[in-house]
Image (tube, rainbow, N blue to C red):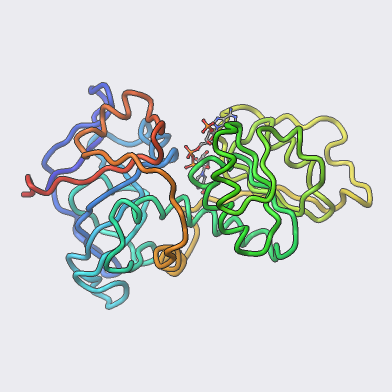
Amino acid sequence: MLAWTTAPDTPSGLTLRETFDPTPLPHETLVRVEAFAPNPGDLAALPGLPPGSVPGWDGSGVVLEAAADGSGPGQGERVLFLGLAGGWAQRRAVSNAMIAAAPADAAWEHLATLPVPATSALRAIRRLGSILGRRVLIVGAGSAVGGFAVQLAARSGASVVAVARDAGQHDTLRRLGAHETHTALASVDRRVHGAIDMIGGQHLVDTYALLEASGTVIALGHAAGTDERFPYGAFVADPTTADRSITSFFLGNEPGLAAEMGYLAEDRTLEVGAMDVQPWTELPAWIEAGAPRRAGRVVFRVDHTTAT
Ligand SMILES: NC(=O)c1ccc[n+]([C@@H]2O[C@H](COP(=O)([O-])OP(=O)(O)OC[C@H]3O[C@@H](n4cnc5c(N)ncnc54)[C@H](OP(=O)(O)O)[C@@H]3O)[C@@H](O)[C@H]2O)c1
């Protein structure tokens, strides 16, 4: 089969080459990959991969061989999946903990955008406990994870406060369910029960300061790439600030994602926003250009006309 493999001597760090088909373990499903959508995490991981590795987390496709142990979706089913490697290829073996059947008419591109961002948003919201009737702050709401977090928090009954530095995204965020929109945290004037932060750095420091007593911030992302420096007094508790916490998780370590992925794939109301669909041969040029998302989430369609 053909796969993008790591090649440190190329400008993008990738080369398309012939490689061995994956051999699925008993609990793995063999899929034909139709589309994949790179995440910031895929791209950050690229330089650390050994030469010749096949990168790629999220994707969608069709089951070629069901898992030998009888678990997971059946042959011919349309699926979405994730794993920490192997996705930028014509075929891939996926653990059944991370694959779910999708409606037969779901678009490959739509499904490929869901696994890491939408499942991360769902798991982050669950960590906040019941948010019915409570204020929930989404920092970096214009990101892929943020857009899903706004929708899922709103349908969970929260009053959603969305912060996205680009005011041009605010109408969309309100349509997705945000009750308040802000370009910066400085204008958020009431405390929140919970928060999900995609940005980190000073955003995390300021988000923590906005928590009410017993509130939690999920430090999910670190897009700013800057340090977090908490001022003296940030953790001095009084009756209005006691028992606040900051926590984090890594989706790749989360057990049993298949059920949530299936739920998200079934949901016809979940919006993924604009998509910039490109042939997979454009992957290296996109990476060399700095992986821009100017026209929405970038999704690559896999070419099987040169299948081997
Ligand atoms: N812990 C986990 O398991 C997990 C899972 C999924 C994602 N993540 C992390 O979560 C973050 C979001 O992921 P994603 O896929 O949603 O990313 P994304 O769609 O690429 O969005 C990144 C967002 O960060 C914003 N941003 C970047 N630098 C900023 C800065 N200095 N100040 C304010 N905003 C800034 C961008 O705003 P503009 O649009 O205005 O440029 C954009 O909205 C990433 O750090 C990712 O690695 C972690």
